[in-house]
Image (cartoon, rainbow, N blue to C red):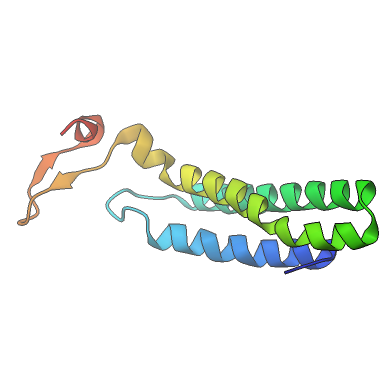
Length: 120
């Protein structure tokens, strides 16, 4: 676990880069995803992670003794990852949420599509 702010920021950046790739490859391939959506999703996830990590680490180091701050810094990555992963997942899935996605049978016939697919 990272106990310094620079290391914490670096590992959060690495973690969210990996999460963005996971969300990209787990997307619904039948719903097109633009490069703009990918860029916004990645930027939002990394920005959220770094903002939460930096804010928490600064708050901890300013209000706690050095020994206590070192103990607490180990837990900063968890909330920053949660916030970033939620934002990344929502932004990546937003086109599917807004427009729906196709539901198909075994033969590939579309049973329901668009917003109707949410009630099928």
